[in-house]
Image (cartoon, rainbow, N blue to C red; front, side, top):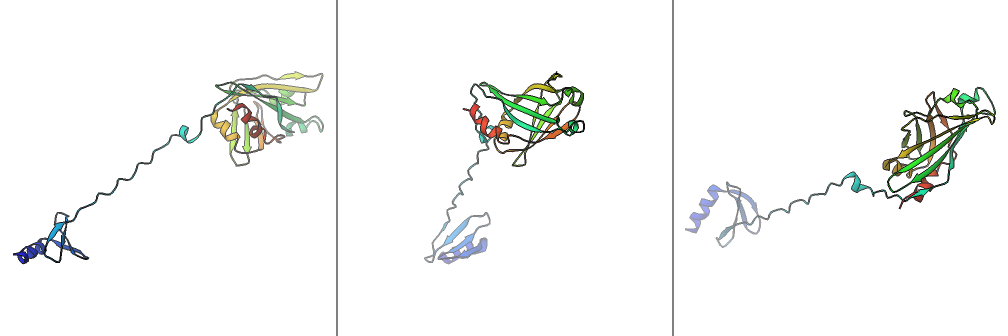
Length: 216
């Protein structure tokens, strides 16, 4: 009787592997274990542990939130260099410089800029600072951060002293604050309403030193 049962199983099952006992796979996919003593049983199938889901973090979770404290830092000269346009007219009075000042409260960071053009007719050469004006800062890590003005600013000329002052300000975003702490400023350019000029960087680690002073 046992032999007949074994033959029946062999007829309807395929041999799967041979180990300490014989394993047979039935047409419906189950595995039968045949032992030397003539007994058999279905092999227990262990369910594979489901792969743990990797939580997807948002951009906000990947970076720490920026917390600000109320502060008003002293102005510092960051940009200072020769204007190629002014150099065509004077070998001495051709310098353009810009002082940066960070002012923060708990909600935003304002960057105040004061451009000083060593010519009493700065408007004639550079025009205004407008909504389309921006300062492009190239960092040592290759990233370029564009600081965009959001409204128009007129210059104030001082003919008796031979220079022109442009006072303007813009708001730094959280992305800009993070980026400006990652590298030194290697190049700078200013987009005036009448031209774009590149200037030397006088204080390349300004943001690396100053931004931590306004962060909690």
